[in-house]
Image (cartoon, rainbow, N blue to C red; front, side, top):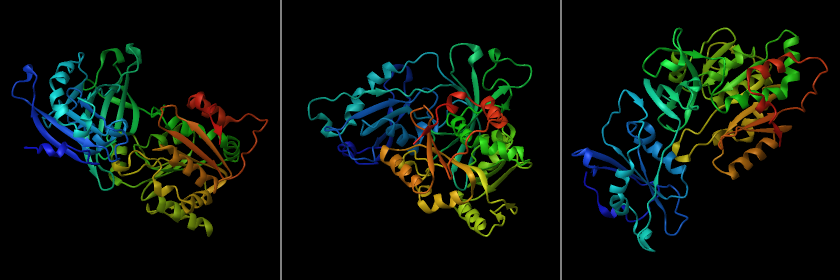
Length: 453
């Protein structure tokens, strides 16, 4: 397509332009490159503004990370020093069915050949002090190989992809890791669900690869970085939960946001919970059942609905002390020993935010507190876009709950915020079998890193 040069003379917040350009590499004669230019939604803070380029990793050009506006936005937001990102990759609409990371990176020559293009796509103000430097950023992750199992469309989350991947966990074959992932197109850089998969009987890790053998789920461990510390928050309520178990009752959990269902399954199979899950998108639940082993039935019930509406319904029913139909046709008890919140913003333009702003409202938190048992806990996965958001979140929670605790996931992104409705029960002199079971099921590192706010 023909592009007007004046399009790129100034930074225009959120402007997004794509076009094709002849590949200058001698080894790629007659091929075309896809060029995408995205300006930050924020006004430039540097004077002159800074521009960066990125070459799409070979054979990954059709991945939503590199082929969609939402993916570009997330790439740009991860490099806040730059006001414009120029992304260059293969223009073919399809990548190979099975992606395997090339052994050799031969992009350096292409990057040098494209420098005149990068300068031509830089705003005039960048030349204020002479010819600017346009650095070439490298996209690095731990993906070794991948294959898409299904792409489908949900009425709430939109398009989603299920894929099996091999990720790098060290050089030894014994450390090879295979995972099954769920990602949404609206936020493709975020892995929504990740579970471990292992080759079916008869195959060792040293002789298999993605696309070569069939895999089965391994639901005995949690591999998503924030789920283990979220489960570790249960240690705060361990004396109370142990008392419930000793009285013959199953502890009860409400999970807002189901995704692939890894957390729900772990709470049931590894820790003996009765679990109620709420998911906004029925297609996500279909995918979870087909690919991630989510099973409705004994001790797990999953409901389709809006999480905030479900909290309000349960809170209303709790006031009159009766069960509540949250859309599944079955009444749900209205008191829970733990509520776990794994919800994020549905708009990539807002950046990655968890929980969504709608959840951080006093009336919502009051409703959540009303359906907690006296010594129950509320555990929330938090991805703050900035310090101000996190401080506001803390202050809002402090207005509603007795005590707050924090677990730093350690990935530079997530925190687990834990709110308790009443002062914690002191530990008993008797052995706490639930706490022992919890310690065997998850890493003790997070059990020892819970800090009171």
